Length: 320
Image (cartoon, rainbow, N blue to C red; front, side):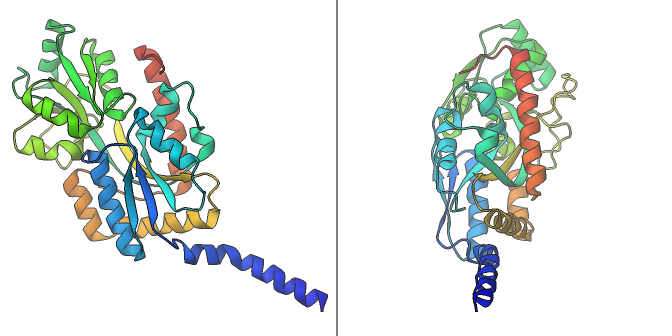
């Protein structure tokens, strides 16, 4: 009898991971975004959340938590209950935080698991049309002729648009003043009105302004041109050989989240990202969609941290 009971108990325990997989999510999932509403990343996050909600028949709710260069949102998720119902819209900026901040209230590699990438996009260098430059080369020449007189916007210190411009400044040898904003929704009006001259932005956030002529695109940050704006050359083509920054978006969860839940979330993300409607919506926004394995996604995070640590050192950017 004891043997039968033990066998039954072991069978029940073995079934728990499968049960966890099939019942997740059991309630709405919070997708925490480190930026204010209205920017490129927020738009991508909302598009993805809508697709996941449709797939699950259960809501994925976007929760914007801007502040502290993304530290506020990161800490919230790192300390959330690790059951898969609070996740983080992470990406390249996640790799930048441990490089730029000395005393983070979490350990990026220890406290987060990257479930899967969602897609990637370049940053794009845009200027107010009043700036007398139509190419990267002309912009560099103009900045060198006016050291310290040009300024550029960013959605905040330590985010990829900020670091991309700092890399640009270092490689081009120009002095352009940083004007950080609390989100791109606040930066765009000043850029469009000419209060600031330039900005790097995730391509999805600027496409509409570029096509409407409100902003002039000088170059994309990736090694290859973007299919969404094929007429815009790369920064490398503009004279900064070797310039290559690709922004990637992903979903992170607390690292203590049960493996069956992470596996289920990874598989469901792959299904959602393979749907033609989502792929078209991402493409229209300037994002190349694509799910990845957890192993690959976490390896990319480690690699990016190492890469940007060197960039920050070489550019002389102080830690916060």
